[in-house]
Length: 139
Image 1 (cartoon, rainbow, N blue to C red):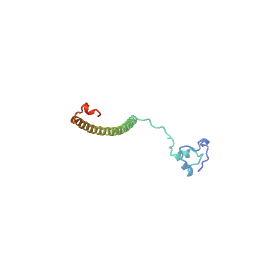
Image 2 (cartoon, helix red, strand yellow):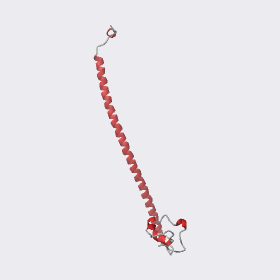
Image 3 (cartoon, rainbow, N blue to C red):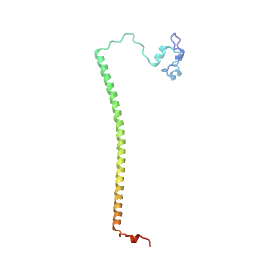
Image 4 (spheres, rainbow, N blue to C red):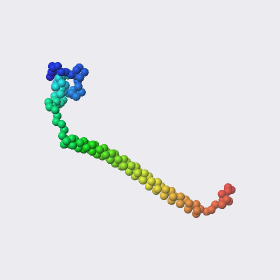
């Protein structure tokens, strides 16, 4: 449907970004269509023929309360995200600490075994007959 009218988009605006190519392909809007047709197609509302009312004190208070609520919600969402990230970091840190505790326990066990072996060897050396210089010299 092509509208021939004095108000047209200039050549460079014949394919505005807000008009989907699917609508153009379906024939709802043709390139170079009238501005009012484009506004209707995208759901734009016409301008009010009267002046808007001045906001009342109650409306201003409502707007201020809504703004405070939005800020509080944004802050709460930010803090919730921070908490979730911190929980992940704490879980990773705890896993690392547990792994290090396991390694410490394994090394303690190894030290106990080595101490026992050292004690056994020291006992063997203590009980071995004393060698004198005559026994060590070659014959």
